[in-house]
Length: 355
Image (cartoon, rainbow, N blue to C red; front, side, top):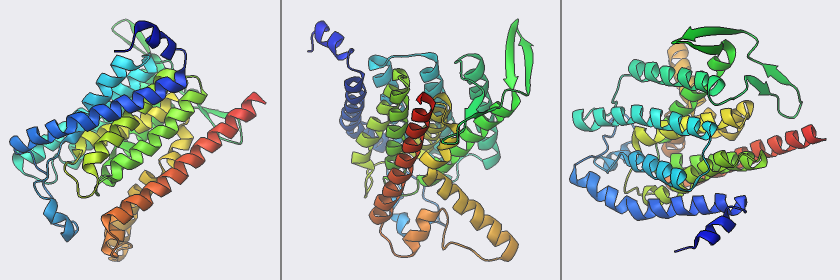
C-alpha cells in the first residue's frame, strides 16, 4: 500500500495524477467486467438485434448488453475516489449519469419487453431536452460557466448571454441566457444521439469516445483545470478497459445506458472547457454519423433513392464488404485526426491569447 507521504508527492505532479486515474479506471474495468458479463448472462439480459439491420449482425442476438451500467459505476467511483472535484466536473458527471439513466430505462424496455427499438423516439427526445436544458441552466447559474463562446483561431467571442431573463424560483434568481442555453441543449441532445448511432459496431463507440476524451483531458490540462482533466481521463481509461470485452467479436455491448451517457459527457466537456465550437471537429466522427442518417432520410423522402447502402455510414462500409474490424480501426483513425486537429486549434488559439 502506498504511504500517505507518497500520496502527497503524487499530488504535486498533476500529469502523473491524470495518467494514474486513467490506468486505475482501465484496471478496474478489466477486472470487473467478467463478473458483470456473468451477471447479465445469468439474468438473461441480451441484445435485441434489429431485423432490418445488416444480416451479419443477427448472430449477435442475445449477446450480453447494458455494459454501460458498469462503465458509469467505474467512472464515478474512480473519479470520486481519486479525483479533485469541483462544480464543473460534477456538472459533467451529473449530465452523464442523467442521460445514462434515460438509456437504462430504454435498455430495460428492450430487454424486458424484447423490443429492439426500446423507448419511443418522442419520449427519448423529450427527456433528453429536459436534461439538456437543465444542464445549460446549471452550467450558468451553479457551475459558473460563462455564456460567452470563444471563436477559435480568429479570436474574439460571441456573447450569447446578451439576450437573458431572470426568473425568481423559490426565492432564488435564475439567469436564463436563452441563446447559450439553447446551444448547450442542442449540443447535449446531438452528442448523446450521435454517439448512440455510432454504437453499431463492436468497439466503435467506446474507441472513439476514448480518443475524444483524451483530447478534452489535454485541453483541460492546458487550462490548469485538473478536475475536468481527471474526469476525462477516468472516462477514457474506463472505455479502454471496456474495449477488452467489447472488441470484435464483442462479449458485451454498452447499450443505450453507455452511449447516451458518454455522448452527454462529450458535449458537457466541451461546455466546461469553453470549446463549444470545437466540438463538431473533435467529435467530428459523430457529426459524420448523424449527417449520414439525416441525408439518407431526406434523400429517400424527396427522391425515393438512398445515398448510402445503409445508414448510419458505418453500415454503408459494411455493406461494401469491409469487415467490422476494418471499419472500426479506420473510424478510430479518423477520430484521432479530427480530435488531434481540434486540440491543435485550441492550443494555437490559447497561444494567441497569451501573445
